[in-house]
Amino acid sequence: MTAGTELVGRWFTIDGDGGIVRYVGPVAGSSGEWLGVEWATGGRGRHDGSRDGRRYFECRFPQNASEGAAGASFIRAVARIDWGQPLLRAVRDRYSADGPAALAQLAGGIDGRRGRIEAVGLEQVAEAQARLPSLAVVGAESRRVWGSDGPLDELRGARTLLLA
Image (cartoon, rainbow, N blue to C red; front, side, top):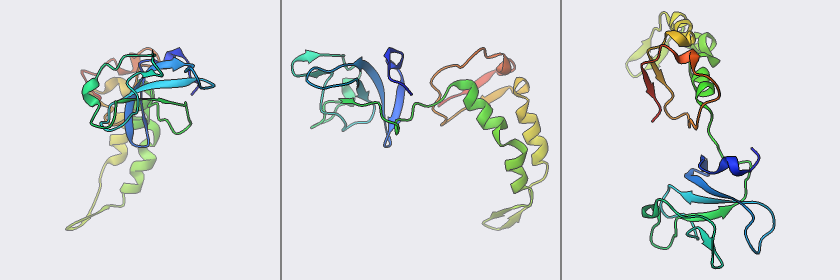
């Protein structure tokens, strides 16, 4: 992903820690473009949104700072930053990406603690879930959803959207 002002306000994870981009641009005394980030994970950060007496951004959640850490950092936009995914992509991946093929592997059975469990009808379940407009409850938990990637017509039947 290319850094730019569209990143301000975006959540991300890197090396298991999450945060939000508060600033994108140059930092005095350093070359190139930097991301000013506020960490959601306590114990991270050497800055408070300022560097060498110049304020670049305000930390909105100073309670995330801890002793010995100011709660914010300036980092480069590197490839290992996980920016998450838009809602429709997350839902499509969950309900129709592997669909019947993934469930077909389970059709032979699942090894449980008390023996083999026979899985019946999983292909029909996958086919029903792939019809997104018919779903009343749509779950995108743990999919790091950050916004929408288009009209949500495909989810018109959804009455409940789970994102947490």
